[in-house]
Length: 522
Image 1 (cartoon, one colour):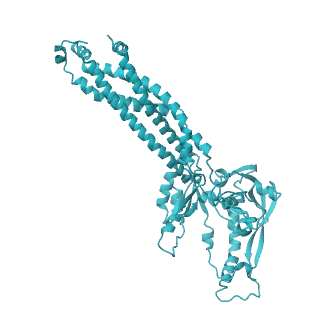
Image 2 (cartoon, helix red, strand yellow):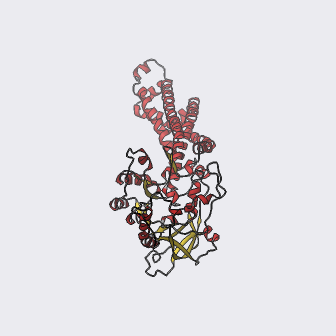
């Protein structure tokens, strides 16, 4: 009689035992299936969340290291060009952008974000106390695919972005320089694409009759002093593009400042900012002498903020580790990875429960199958003995038992997977909402260090995106993917085979002679 025919007859003849094994496999398999499905969903959620992080990194001062330093007169210095080149040459980097900051513009009418929350109570005239926030926040651009405009919160709605000719230094000082501004700023100032606007930098001019004491004026308020004489130097710009700012309400205490910076930004070529700084810097040195102030050197001022574009968001962590190893003390790589850290922490708590359930399920299935197989083979010992007595090898008899077990277990696992998927669908939204909805800090990109709240430099630069709770929940997909199905069956069949191997001890130790001497054949 062929093997498959014997398997079919024995399964029908022992239908009660087969049904018992099927039922137990379904019950225990459902636990394993649900654990595998949820575990894979957690893994994919993390990958999708990380995949939605802008693949941008920059270098910032490590405030945690600074706050923990013992030296009160700490000089953190600067990152030299050799280190910057080493980081830029890491295999993950596909583009390097440099961005200078304007030395200080006279302002246009700016946009004041309407923010009122438990974290920020808006004053009657909130900008009166922060005059610097009224200036246009101009940032330099060095690349036609500038990270601010391709990976940030800014979307071109009218006009164009910079081209190569815009980013090459112009010798004609009277030719208006291209500028890109937010649409809201254009509306507030009646501007459009093609408009010519004049912005000013400030040059200090000491009056001819000034009487400056040796060592300058000490302890004098620069804004109330008669020698506080600043001349506005005009620069003309032509609006080539308008951008929309995709910034939803952030709920942390610095939201007001951050949105002021992001909404009131302007983008101009780096060469123009460098030219303005070089023209203004000698006059600022005079102001320092007059008012006995210190400040940065021109070289330090013209050290740009560096942005590294990474080939894949999933490689940000590897790049951060490699970059941190090259940086000097008190500096670190800043990415948006920490935005998903609270999410991962919440999901990891679920994952620990799921992993525990998975191992309990696997051990339970293994134990139950081993006991059932020992029981079934003990009950069928005379039948199995006859097969061996008639010339069947023990391995062939074992193969028959194994085939019966695998068929029953496979059917049970299919049913268990369907039930497990239904259960996972019911509980996934609750679990994820509970895991990532405990607080809002994951939305902001900020971390709290020793009572000091540190914000991502990328966030102030307008690079990044906020992941809404609903979007994160949508990442938690418990549908049955090919990977999930394959993984479940590998675990299930592997457990069954292990149970068969353990229980085969009974069969191979079976003494056929003693069994047949008892005269019972079934």
